Length: 132
Image 1 (cartoon, rainbow, N blue to C red):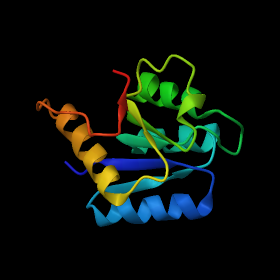
Image 2 (cartoon, rainbow, N blue to C red):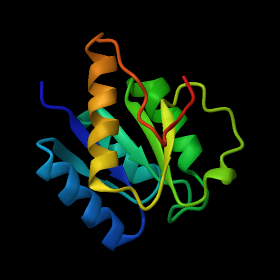
Image 3 (cartoon, one colour):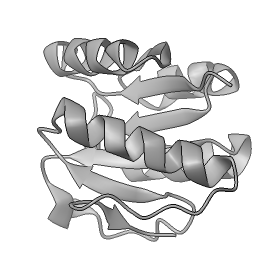
Image 4 (cartoon, rainbow, N blue to C red):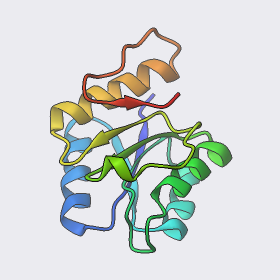
């Protein structure tokens, strides 16, 4: 199954770079979102979401992540340059990685998520803070 990845990032250059990395790794990009409404619109077409914390509509990333996981069963990983800003309960979010995320880290995280979703035993990537 080809997972569809949503990139939730309001910085156009970072979003474009992340899309390129995800595509080169053989995943399909369902689209990019820069806030809650655009993420909500992409949710039915996504399996995995890489979500920044601070977006165009404020520090809504954690709320978006919980919403995507709860309402759509999307596997969510927070991708942030400010990991200490995550203070809310993210019980449905898989984990968090720091920006800038290297292509190797993104590949490892997406492989980890794929393994979990397919019921295989998986070990969290080094450098990933796991919430679930």
